Figure (cartoon, chains in turn blue, purple):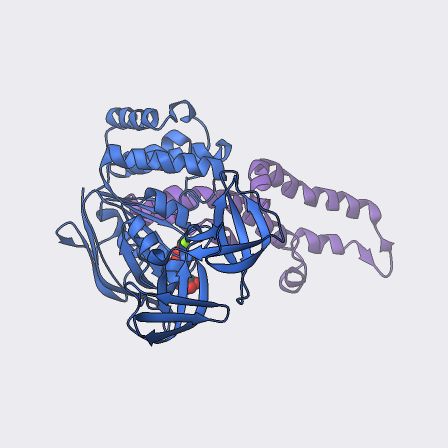
Length: 357
Length: 121
Ligand SMILES: Nc1ncnc2c1ncn2[C@@H]1O[C@H](COP(=O)(O)OP(=O)(O)O)[C@@H](O)[C@H]1O
Ligand SMILES: [Mg+2]
């Protein structure tokens, strides 16, 4: 068991590519942390820096009380599951799981016992004589996990391990990984580009973009209180609605003025003025029955079964997506009024995307 | 050509082995080498055929008493007597025998080695 601490990690490849630009992070012992961000944001590189597969250009890596920045990967007592799973194709499942024990010169009797033990836990005991190429996606996944667990590492690093599975299996494996974490109580650092995976699995999410940490926090805090425009747009399906406009100070509060929308903000409105972007999640756009709200035309309907996504043309540049009850009888072309949950609105400065209210 | 086969081994396999504590040498011996073995066999056959049938250099460098088979083959034609088809065909057949035998010996590897992308990603 171990905590992990990253201090101002920087990693450059050559002169031009800066994959990681000053990442500092503390991961507690036993914590399930998910690094999430779009492709190319430096997640894998960060994980490789923790593992020792890459050396940082500057900065430090600590595992527990040890400064491991210059240690060999094999000395760090970490387990890693790779995106491709990296099972050795020329070895049987048994030999794959036994490989790390063999390297550590575990005596054959104990080795066999431990391999069979972990194979039973992960339900792959019947596959021990097979080759990796004959396994299904889910089976290969479990074997890769078994190979990592068998040496009882202090922390687990996982780089998009579920990306090769189909959607249904992926959701199942998510649950299984969470259960595994609860059983092992080891530190998990999990990398994904899938925000839903991050939301469902993490104790704490670390959102990365362009080599920098944008925000860290528990899933719901990230969802409800995004630190900036990027984080707000990255989380949530369908994505948050954004409306560009301008903030003015008026008597009794501030006013947000967009092309087809004027919104008086009485409580806790932003104190600053100037160009701003309003963010509102689809579930906070309400179709109203009465006369209040803004008029709009329904331009598109996407039924999801339990609820329905409604695209509203209200005269602004883009249409507004709302989540409506599946029982609401709607048709394209309907004219409806909508309101916004004012207590749930967020505002970003147009200049740098920083959250201002 | 060997390089292509070694490049074909995914880096993540080497990474995985190193993270499990395998030294660089052990990683090459236990992971990289077994995976490129087929590739090496194909390379062996290629190099063998290339040398076996080499003509130009052999013609220039050899002397009448020590010569390679392809050069010998060429000697059975002259302006005066025309082609001696019999001996030429006979030797031509004999020449191919070692190549065929070698091919059969390493056939198992050839199938794998020639199909690039043999490693599941
Ligand atoms: N070995 C490398 N050499 C050069 N550039 C690299 C290397 N590894 C990664 N990069 C670059 O660094 C950036 C971050 O890559 P990576 O950490 O793999 O992103 P992610 O895993 O978030 O998709 C990318 O722009 C990528 O092209
Ligand atoms: Mg990656």
